[in-house]
Length: 275
Length: 269
Image (cartoon, rainbow over all chains, first blue to last red; front, side, top):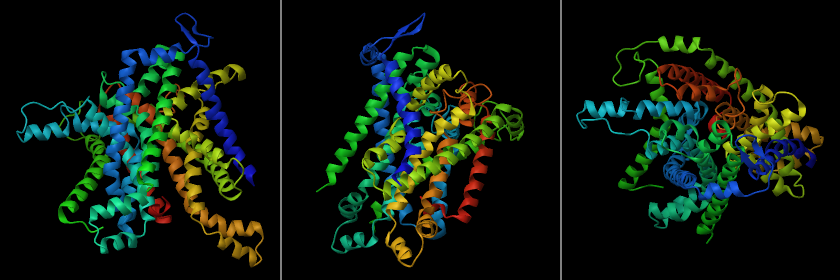
């Protein structure tokens, strides 16, 4: 029966592991403007990526935006997931669909929605001008805030669905018992709900952090030309720059930071509450 | 958790903010799809349905929609059975090195789509050279890439449904004389059903809306809907895209409400 793992395992080996090994090999090659790629074994591409101030800035921006967005998503997602998990009947079904269906709409469409909402002639600025709050439109678009709003809107459903599945498994009696014994709502949350929901918090945060590190559409469409994150930078190297070795090195730096931070992050979160 | 009133207000505010963030852009797209002016600005100069006609006449969106639908259906059809079989074997047979296998199968979730996408692109180019046939910008190439999305989601969701299951029911059926296959068909499979349905739903969603993995693998005449939309949006923001999106939003909403009639979506996730 263990053989049933094989088909899926072989597919992932062939379609993920083998391509990743090839990409790693390419990252050790040299770029030549005339021949595009020259066989070599050098770490020069990695050194260039971390030494070049431009790419260092891109990496720092990506890490800051991804971390901030993940924390914000957790802060908004937890109460919503709790609310959803404790709901009953038909409305719960409806609320779940409302949370889930923007996922199918895709992040490009939602970026278009943000453009219409935040632009100079957008709904928010039109409302503020119409009410006489502002004399000139606020620059709401093409900055870090707009990108973070776009990202959080995209990843929130994943966080909410992951968390609410875990919170549903927490018996209400546990909360009621703590509260009957005199715990304040905040204490009940901190000492009962949060520790029991921790596996969900870790799973949701890891999933969301990976998605944030991967941000493409929100960064390109809402951040404007000056705003650079790793995912568009990697693609630029392959599509516009044709510098495959450097692009491959950037991709591995992105992957390395994502893996290390998710592993360290889950370990720290896990330790905080294992008491 | 009975909260005192300032806490209750803060709680409600956070839930409200979450729903606003999720829904505002979607609602806004539907609103601007009927604005008359080409450059989106509020308030509208008038209302029109012309953008829907324009969207229909632009082949790229209709073709992108069909490609996305094909890719998502095929990737779900391949990934869900394979992923389900793997999850079943991992939970029940507990093979040696099961933990490592589980990590391998969930691996695609931990790798940013951009990284996996560029790796696959390089891999496809190499394979094209060896096999002397096209793989990038073909349907097969896209489906193979999207199977990488459907397998981990299936393994994750089906494993969860199997772990929550009480094996005593299977033993009882076997003790009452049911053959192993009958036990599987009548007891185990029904217990896995919610997990499998959730896996189909999430696999389809993941594939249909995927942008990052597909960006380098699409080609002229074979573009998925999200990539077609991104290309359009990088050059102009007129309500045509909003019209396409609105049609998509309404289709998706109807699809989900109909699905919910047959299987409670709230219970599958």
